Image 1 (tube, rainbow, N blue to C red):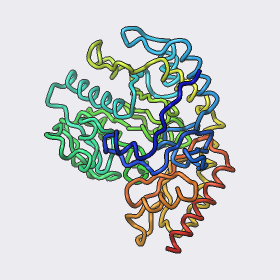
Image 2: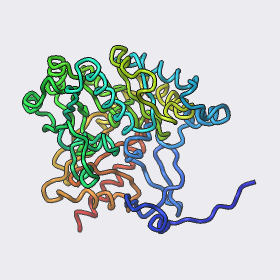
Image 3: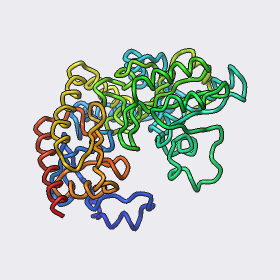
Image 4: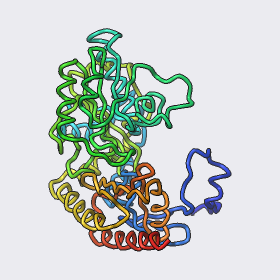
Length: 402
């Protein structure tokens, strides 16, 4: 028998939730594929993908099956024991990437936290405590823990929480000369997003990533790629480093990895992984059977030549229409991570575009105040792309009419 649930409305958020978010005025209650329905039964097309998380849309049968089967088997045993789904997932990730070893956690921030701690531990063990400096990029985003927010290059997120973690510097993105000037024998790691996500969907230049790899090798520093947003098929490759052909020492993954179930992973080589001996780092929930079972199913669907090729084709389908929209001066990105830069007249008004789209039954994102971001399901139907873009064009037309 079902228990009657008390009704809740958007107003309840302001009563009972910490006010660190300002969610939309409607509450989604059901999703299927790339469609979502709210409390009033209104249908929206989802081009937001839970911020590049719902890689297979909503309620994908393979994920529902994996979660249901695992939920009826084993939920949690902690890392005092290992579990079969975690081992299967580690095998899949190791087989598909440069990595020899995987560490599982619950989020992108935790994957980055593990990556940064590992980089410092490696340098400490090999060269001593002086080699601890981390170089990040201006406007980068690596998570919300104190360590990751300090490494992230956006002071608005890190100011006001007391002393910041020291030994971290920030250089302009895509500027190899700036990195060359900053790196030294005290540098333990350089961390780069192959495509800067939160600050506007800015892809790295190939020469920049190749140069960063070379500089890290010369200075015995580790190259970390934050692939939380670009990973698991988003670019049309399983990971963006494969798109560029530049291999990092450590890679962080999350978001799409669980298709909506919270899971993160740090991937690295045997030689680096051996520095995290038993007891040096851990997590209660990391690698839990539920998350790992779902992630295995995600990879089985996404990591095929057909699915990855379709991501590239869908990019072109989006781009052809988006480039004709007079609100935008530039459409950039790779695969199904697309950023549309607003023209000077519309600068700072990305939120207005989001609101206009929602009124037409479309969910989109922003990446800073000047960029409208699209991060839909990687298997979104072409018909949904077309209908969603029809709705978007209607929203833009109304905005332009004022």
